[in-house]
Image 1 (cartoon, rainbow, N blue to C red):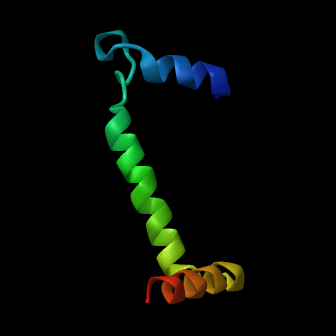
Image 2 (cartoon, one colour):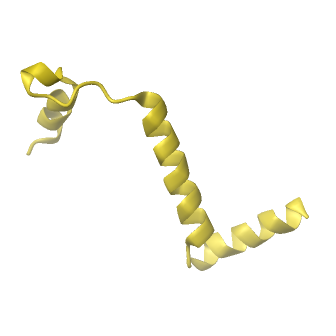
Length: 59
């Protein structure tokens, strides 16, 4: 599916076959939670190093 077409369908009202408008606050919270989860559980050595530095800064 063409990317631009999918965006148009996303914002169409439900009665016209779209998904309706997405809740921006919910999308923000979901992105924040996913990012925090990635940073807390990542095995990437750079992320682990940054996490260690941040934890040392807190304590």
